[in-house]
Length: 153
View 1 (tube, rainbow, N blue to C red):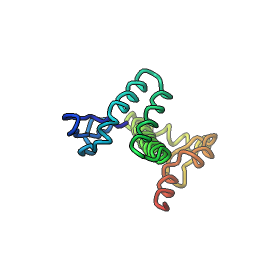
View 2: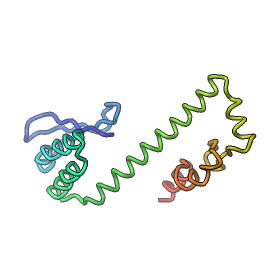
View 3: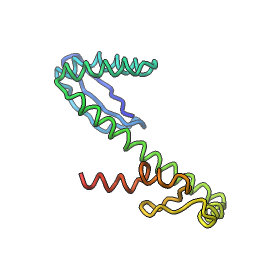
């Protein structure tokens, strides 16, 4: 979800980290080590765009090795960021669907799903969840549980 753009000469590279909407979230002066890594990073991006995720991963590992960066730490950070983004998208999607039903005057669908026993209200996040998926929701998808685990770390 992040895009990196670089400006300047080889010895003076300005890096802009942008989110998926193109908004700059961070800007900094690249070190010489980072500037030397730019061709490998661009190669990784190209491989990812052309459907070669393993090739992209190999390029990123080379970058980590050349900059003395812990590969596992980078993987963990990427995984955490991905999960955070997915959680936001899931929450936004659920709210959009529920508000869509409400806007369409179909609150009765939500009430019927609750009252007929086919769905139940999550006691952690107050989402209306199909009864057949409730255990999986609690185990893997409930955003309130992720928020609790983030606070304890």
